[in-house]
Amino acid sequence: MLLKLRLHFFTAACLLGLLSLPVLLASCGGNGTSADQASSKTGTPTTGNVTGPEPRVDSVFVIRTMQADARFKAQERWARKFYRERQFRLGWFRQHQLVPQATTFLSVVDKAKDDGLDPKRYDTKKITDMLVQLKSVGPDTARRNQLERKLDVTLSGSYFAWASDYYRGVANPRDTRNDAWKVKRNKIKLDHALMTILRERESTYPYYDFAPLHPEYNNLKKALALLRARQAAGGWPTLSGTTHLKPGDVLPVVGLLRQRLLGTENSGPAPAATARPVNNVSSPAATTYDPALVEAVRSFQQDLGLPPTGLVSGETLRELNVPIHERINQVILNMERWRWLPKKFEPDYLIVNIPEYRLRVYEKGKEALTMRVIVGKTLTATPVFSDKMEYVVLAPYWNVPYSIIDKELRPKLVADPGYLNRLDMEVVKGYGRKATIIDPATIDWANVTQDNFKYTVRRRPGPKNDLGDVKFIFPNSNDIYLHDTPHDELFSQTKRNFSHGCVRVEEPIKLATYLLRKDPNWSQQTIQDTIAQRREKYITLKQKLPVYLVYLTAWADANGHPHFRDDIYGHDKALAKEYFD
Image (cartoon, rainbow, N blue to C red; front, side, top):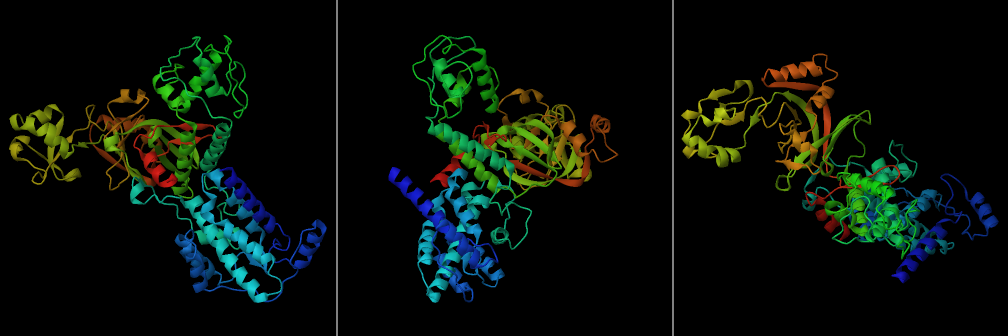
């Protein structure tokens, strides 16, 4: 392993050293004289001025070069687009000299591990070998031109392979293995991104800086660096599975808890996260579960979405004992999901993070509203997708699924058709305003099947209605929507995956008031008055609101301080098999 690391370091050093040759790093449009002068001052050898027409490639050459490397095959279409658009001129050379962006790009690739990526996927070893050949080619113009062509396309292939992973994701979210993710895709055009890097095209996105598209990604990158630093310093200890701690307890395990959360077994101020643990500390102060450590536990519990009780047992103990390498992988997987998201969100949008059980509304890029939500159970998981909200429905009917009609209602209705009325339900034919009420006594409930039942059973608006007072519709093939619930007590639970797939919101009136705030016909009072009439009312939003239902089990603040949530649907586990294997 040590030998591999040394070889990797040597390769990277050689690569950057070769690219630092002034003759190779002349700026676009520069001449060789200043490069030679700079070289003579530093003592760096040069190949001298190179003259003659700049070589070009053709489509056959581009395809052949890309297909020759298994790492680049998938990126062939981007290379063809890139070179076709520039009439097959070289991209990384100006007057036979490599542009400075080549050095920048290769240094970025060398640090790809910082983004949870594998530098070996981008084949910089081949580039290193070609740079050595280019340096020693001498006056052989034909040989040099051929090397320039091959190096140029190889650099492009390496960039497209890296940019595809960095901006679009290593795993394909539309792959059958990740079919749970149906959020609209990042549509970045990699050929345009490369043209931006080479200063041949303007863009509002930070391609030139090789920077991420979302600050949330960068926050996770900081968290990854901090976790790896902690891992390099020895990681964190595992507490006994029988641990039970309450404030004031004096037990040896407190030293391990202090080391786990504060990086030392000593009481007092916490040292740097990378400090090595202090061993054999058994003083009363070190083994006392004191207020400072209790506060650290409460902060940890909040970071994990747990009740901040300060008690160490059960769920808190389980989270404390998650190995550091698993947390590192969890951060990397969620960095990957940020690559799948659109390259930017709309100024106004609504987003639900399913594992966090939380909804947020953004207005002009800033959080305007947030509330707790209830999401689907494991067997009826809330799908991950995006759409646009179009309607707010006040005092909605609830259409009873046929599965409930068949298993729960039909046996009772055979004996007593009036049972429906006591449930505040009715049978109708047709939909919307054209729906007509049908007497349940006229239906042969004993012989009803899903194929021959041509009616709808629905619950009337009111306090018993399963959708509560408000429903928010963004039409989609999953038949998923946001809605109120008569069971407000469930929002006090820490883990709130109780629904059949739809998302129940904690403050529906507040959300409806916000969504209709620009409509003079609606205020909180008129909304409540309409609900009180118990007559279903559809309101079309004047402007559709983008809605994102996403699945993020890790995120971090601007300082890289991480937050984690449980993988309630197993999506992390499924993605890990593809990403790490």
